[in-house]
Length: 199
Image (spheres, rainbow, N blue to C red):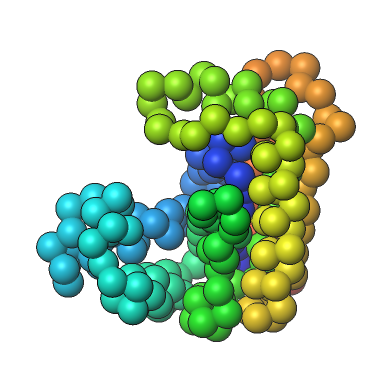
């Protein structure tokens, strides 16, 4: 299976993927932005993501996006692709998974993780100094999660794949990282069901 995993920044995707790797060590986990950066380094001498966004003309940036999708699509076995359904830009949102990318990626599923905005704000507060993020209100975060839903469904339509929504808004954590563990178990279950269906 190829699964695209999306959530707003600070949702705990990295922690969730760490648990997935512990539960199912043979799954390949790839970061879409890392693939883009490697291609931009090879072809344009770009050294980091900020430089890639600022220096590459839009047409070249789109080419890099497409080349990354082509490379990821060729990966064998079960693959989880860590990326964004929507990207916040100047008060609006930009599609993270446009049709031309979905046509090349051809994933089996998009998994969308959603949380109580207060939980996300708490997680982001722990990241202070580690990541440079703009301050957002709970309403801003909820709006981004709503945008993610719309963009995930649009992307699924273009890629002809399923969307799974893991909504943790009403699930209060009884211990740290419980949400991430729960999400990881749900992703692993999805992969194992996919494996048994192909036997």
